[in-house]
Image 1: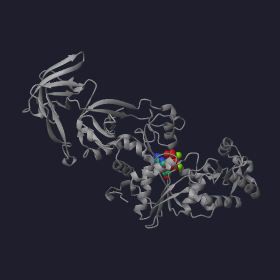
Image 2: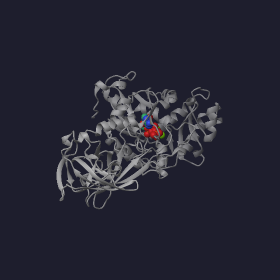
Image 3: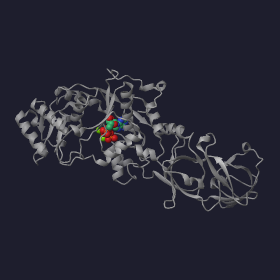
Length: 530
Ligand code: ATP
Ligand code: MG
Ligand code: MG
């Protein structure tokens, strides 16, 4: 796999996995197909791939599909495609559902060994009792009773549905994760792959330690919020006589003014507050791509983060300024003007018949190519720029030369037209105003420029707060622009710079059928446009 790592910059990544032996390390990235991949997932995938590569080992990609209520084939497919986009190449792809029969046998083993029991305590009550350290009445049932109830669960009968399997660990444990966690539940919702074959599904707490052990994982990388569950994870392996797997904690990546968890992202999608999982305001791989984030910048950013355990609430500017460094040297430059109140200017000695000249699309990088610029007697300027001019002001017209303003006609505050004449001998260094302009013409391109803001109004949603209370309902702003006709050649996915406006991602190309051209503003880490 193409990792493009610079070993000299390993920095924080240079943390050894405990007990890792070259050639024997096996890591895994286990996304649940309950949403699209986001940049937190990328961190996890990247770390797993990094360590697998570093120790010349393997990485398993595992679809962790044990909850049919949340999962579906669309998410499965999307995750797979996003993995290609991210260039994460696993050694093997598996599904937790491949092992459903295996889990059933292990559950039976647990019950027969008296290390688990079948319980019908209602969920809310169970939660309270786990908090208070109160044992369920079912805790000391004999094995026969447990086996009979377990059979009922597997049939998914009405009575069986009231039960779940719990591990019998320690209801007094200070680590509450050890207070008899749920191992199996009934669900009658068809599974995307196994359909209605199974009526019971293992919990994450049961499935994960088993599958990690039997798939040969040596190092299970988990985010630090799972730390309290590490003991429980090893308890399951020990109780079933399975090989222990080393757990390595790393910090979850979070960003200010954003939601990252799939449950919350799904809420935005379901509420119709965003265009979909690929909304440019989403931290999903697809959303970020439509905002103009390059995979290269993402990799560099995550690489800088490293595998540290420090709680990670990131600001967006760091990521975007890395992205800017990636795109700035290669993004072709174009001109577009804000359509509302663009100001016509007559250049007395400008060419009466339009003239065309070829100029580079990037002043410092000739490999970006050339574009054709039209020169004419009548041009358009930005209202904001025109407002700064008066008779006698010398300005520089970019890609043309200096020009002296002879007249500025105002109506109220607004400039409605201007006149001037060229002063090509003038030195652009002597002028204060270097302006973008376009020759006035029929074929200026209609462009819609969209600027996105954050979806959440608060930096960090606290435990006791509801993210739904902090939705920013003004997170999208659209402006109509008039574009240089050469913008016609843009394709979806291109990244450009509009001179003096910033970087943009082409979300929709211009065609006869589809107009306007749609551009998304790409934050550059400096000016927070909100
Ligand atoms: P979510 O809340 O987004 O659904 P999850 O942990 O339930 O997160 P999974 O699909 O189970 O989502 O995650 C797959 C892997 O990605 C796990 O190893 C998980 O720890 C990791 N992961 C998920 N979110 C983040 C994040 N924000 N930062 C780092 N790793 C993450
Ligand atoms: Mg999960
Ligand atoms: Mg989740």
